[in-house]
Image 1 (cartoon, chains in turn green, orange, cyan):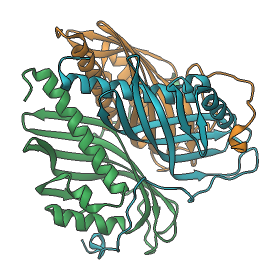
Image 2 (spheres, rainbow over the protein chains, first blue to last red):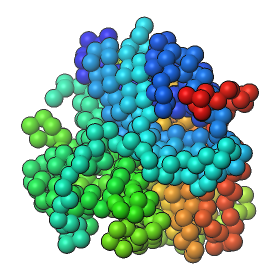
Image 3 (cartoon, rainbow over the protein chains, first blue to last red):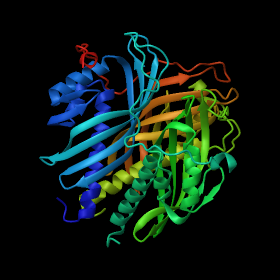
Image 4 (cartoon, each protein chain N blue to C red):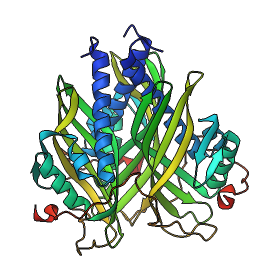
Length: 171
Length: 171
Length: 171
């Protein structure tokens, strides 16, 4: 650990960002095992259902990736909270996909909600959950399924409010 | 302040990035007051019209957010210029929206043009302007309005040039 | 160079990120010369064909930019590997475009694959290649051309696998 906590925090956030970049890169490289290696050995991947451990995560990711000719997972809004050798994070993802077979374009907007740990000096996901915010599918995939255009859990903790007077229209 | 100006600059840029992430997160959480709290007390929000102060900013944001079932503001290209306890920034935003009522998808590409200050040790927006670069609306919103597909101010300072010989097509 | 290699690495990565941000900003400002100035004097730009040196890069970029009314290049997933005064990087780009004339929206997803060097204390591109992963064009451009919807090189190093049993559907 660095003697200067400000430097250590910057380095930890950079390392966690680079883990997220590597995860997306391995997913888009159609490498489920490489993506699963971004998790702790006993990590949990929540992909519309729980996969426990790297082997199960890789199998789940392989099943998902087989549905696509192309994926491109664009990471942004990386918010990290450090707590020593532990961290939590929420980041945004926009993913472009092409369906296998039909080559239809499919777009997904979501959040990655993460728990991380520094294990033997390396930051890894101990839990990563994908939370959908929206999806647009121009057609059906090779299985004839369509992706729901609107039925998504939405932004974590999104509030309900009474409508305000629409100052925007008055402005 | 850190004795090492290189470390201080890195920490300031990280803190400003995290402010921008928090702002987008509060917007997408449908929390106008939380987003307004990212501004200085007397900050200015330019949302197609000026809102001065946190209360006015929150009211304006509430009026905008009421038009949408979903928003997802994806931050990128964060360019920050530091000047002691002041800073200016321009960042890129792509925002996915679903209209309230119709659930139509709407997409906006723009810039956040910011002025910031460190106040009591915390970086806050003193002025934030949204500059539209493009928008695509698949239909009308619940008010029957459509979002202009092309009528946008465009990238700040975008240049006019004489057309070049199209080397790309020759290449 | 900073006496602390951890700080130097963080500062180098920030400087390289800011170079990428400046490049995109100059492109979207319709400033081919400004974008070319992000390259070393003898840098190579691979834009579906090689442009060698700043003058050739600027000419190539001008020819490309002339085809568009609007561009917006959103940078993400910045992965940088440092090696002293040299670096390599791969980052993701999603670019929104409007065609000149028709104003049709065009979307491109790709990768920037970079080689960089620190020259007189400033990080510059010595080689930058654009690799397409996908594109969607809602129509034809002013030249009557359409952008291939699917014919793209794809993610660098993307693997082929035997399909896995689809655990996702079973899950």
